[in-house]
Length: 207
Image 1 (tube, rainbow, N blue to C red):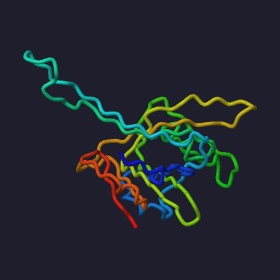
Image 2: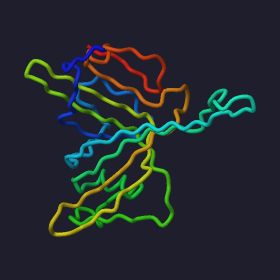
Image 3: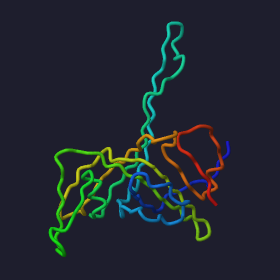
Image 4: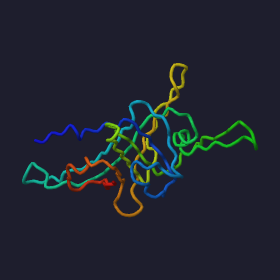
C-alpha cells in the first residue's frame, strides 16, 4: 500500500461563481474568471459541499441470489454552500430569478417582486478552490457545471445576533448535447497519481 501525505489537499479558500446559461467553459484553473461570471462572495466556514449520488437497481433472477446486472436509475451532482453577502446575485438565485430595479430614475430605493409562480432559473456555475501548501507550491481547482439550477434553499433566519445567511444547493442539469455533466480543471499534478477508468466528470490537466 502506497501512502503519500504529499497528495493530501486542503481547500483553504475559494468561491462559487455564476454566469448566464450557455456560458462557455472558463479558462484553466488559477486564471481569474472573466465576464460575465459573477462571484457569490463570502460563505460560511463550512465552505462548499459537493455531492454525487448514483442510484441503480439490481436485476434479480430465479437461479441465484446475486443480481445478474445493474440498471442505473438516476444520477445527481449537487453543489451546496451558505452565503453571507446580502446582494443582488445571491438574492436573485435564492428567490428564483429575483431582480431589483430603481423605484424611479436616479432613486436610491430599489424594488423587486417575488413571484407566486416558481419558474426555472438556469445558470452556469463554477466552484474555485486553492490549496496554498507553501509560497512555491500552490494548486488551483475549478469545477465547472455548464447547466445548473437551485434545487433547494435553506431557511434564512434574520436576527440581531447573526448575519443574514443564504443557504443554496445547486443541481447539475443534463447537457444539451453529449454526455459531459461537469468539467474539472486543475494545475495540480496529484490528479495523475491514480487513473481510475470511467467516471462522469471530465478531468483536464492544465499546466
